[in-house]
Image 1: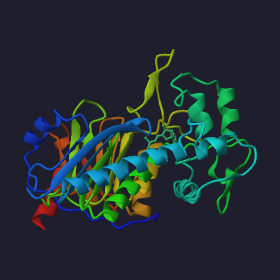
Image 2: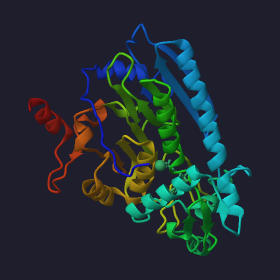
Image 3: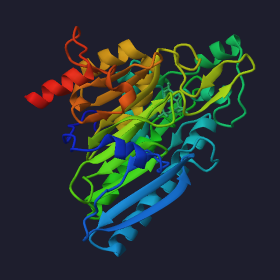
Image 4: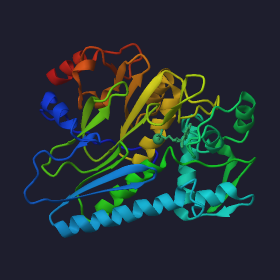
Length: 376
Ligand code: AMP
Ligand code: MG
């Protein structure tokens, strides 16, 4: 797994937004497959539930047999990864790790993933924290038995978190100070990367997987056009716009995804701020990350959500290697400049969306930015 990547974005194809929105209302998952399929391509699609979410895969190849074969390998692989990394399955490696007092010898891929998770925790200054398990559990997000823990309980559980508590000696892993691991903020992105590798190994050049709204794309659509991936409007039922992209992951974290209404009348969601132990309230409602690797996109979607608006913008400027679309609590949409020209906004956001540039003083309106980009 690389921690940086080169993004291959394609410019937005000419497209009628009104027709798109009408079409997308009919599609429960927020993506469109090929509008105009290459007659030679044989498509195969499957849907199943894994990693706690509905997953759908579409593969295009020259033969139906090839597509079906690739589809079946991908489904088995995702089911295998779920068994390896589930926090609740008593046969998973993560379950063994979380319930053992000694070090546990894990598979090479689990050790690599833990190492990557530690690296992402470091890069995000702890905003992405793979040891957040005790808090996620205390709030009831693992069992769906939701509750509001007391301040004392939260303070005590926080003393068991911190990625430095994961020690790796090759494949031997120990967790210090009662730490426990939750890879829920990264596993779907990693599954997307595995999917992309399987497709390439099987000679598939056009495929898409949607893991509950987290999308990984292989190549372009079978007609050669970029895929058009709708980003959910966190305040409504439609989309806030769509990105025309290929060969990359489009992954969103949002407070609307999993939450519950507390007895105090407040809504509590599933992304925990490791500084406070409470659901993150730092000004953002949703964060989308677009980059080649799903693992990176997934870690950053969670991490930037926790950081909040200002820090997320600074992080994008300083780190690079990804693009982002931020939606704030005030319903402002901010689009990073590398994806702005490949993004199409729905009418509701046309007048107000702004572009994040490397220049800290310059947040142009998206309409002005795209008009300038088109003229150049
Ligand atoms: P995502 O939808 O990718 O943002 O992942 C959210 C899931 O990651 C939650 O349901 C938890 O299982 C886990 N999680 C919650 N807070 C964090 C955090 N600060 N860092 C890493 N994982 C987290
Ligand atoms: Mg994530």
